[in-house]
Every structure is written in structure tokens, then in C-alpha cells.
Length: 100
Image (cartoon, rainbow, N blue to C red; front, side, top):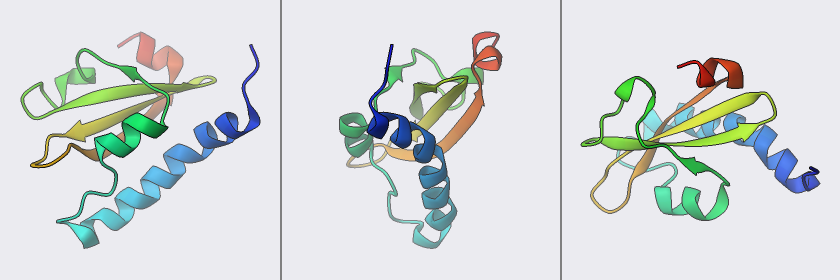
């Protein structure tokens, strides 16, 4: 299976871009860096029924998963007033994700 060059580039750059956004987030504490609506429309992902280690729990947020070769990226969202906001990004080897 081949991937389009842009999709491959996006998959490589996304974790770094989000990490940069999260680094700036404390300065913008009341702002949502990336809303779920923006994420949903632009990032290929799989919905997870529960987050790894149940954090956050189903009352406070949810998680989404994207694969990039041998890496699994978990996007953690917390519920907000208007839209859910990206709260954390976890990158791990696929093998580690599959054994959790």
C-alpha cells in the first residue's frame, strides 16, 4: 500500500506541530489550541472506545488514534463548553500500544 507524499509528511510533522502548540498553550490558558472539529476534519484517525489507562475517563474526555509506520499517536481531548480541546499527545511504538 502506498501513501501520498503529503499524507506521509503530515503524519511525520503532526506530533511535532501539536507538541509546539501544547508548549504555547499555558500562555493561552483560556484558548483551545486545537478543537476536535478541526482535528476531525483534517487528521485521519480511529476512535478509541476508551483511553489508555482510562485517562481521561468517559465523563471528562476521549481519545483518538493515528498510526504512522511503527508509531502510534494517541490524541487526548477534554470536553469543553463549545467544543472539545486537544489536551495531550502521546506517541509510542505500535508494539507498546498493542500490548496495553
